[in-house]
Image (cartoon, rainbow, N blue to C red):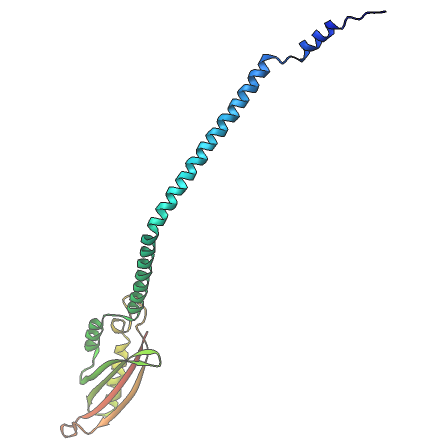
Length: 195
């Protein structure tokens, strides 16, 4: 019978399967890094959840204030819109009336100046009286008045845009007044659309 010594080969196999210490330390270091990263991320997640809860609580506390501020903002926007709407049609009547009185030709007087609403438009309505010696002079005076109404001092806004639309002569009729003084008295009415 033949004997075979197998023991030395087993020892060789044991030596071959042993892990070098360097790899063991590297594996431990990698596990430690992964564990530290995991715990660090868990800490960040926990902190973030705590911050979210705190912020949600603050949001609930601030919601009524935010709603109140939004309502105030809405009210202010409505007021601004109303104010813009008013100022769009507004101009200083005192300056316009002063300019109008300066434009008035001699022998003419205003009897009534008013603003009317006609067909969804605002209209400046001017009625007056003209004292003249003849019909030609009357036509000349009314022509001067209409020309004067188109001057920039009265007709335009400070920005240069027109305040008024077309100027319409509604009437120019003769009356019996003033005949004994050698004058003819004419009533006139003019209308201008306010832009």
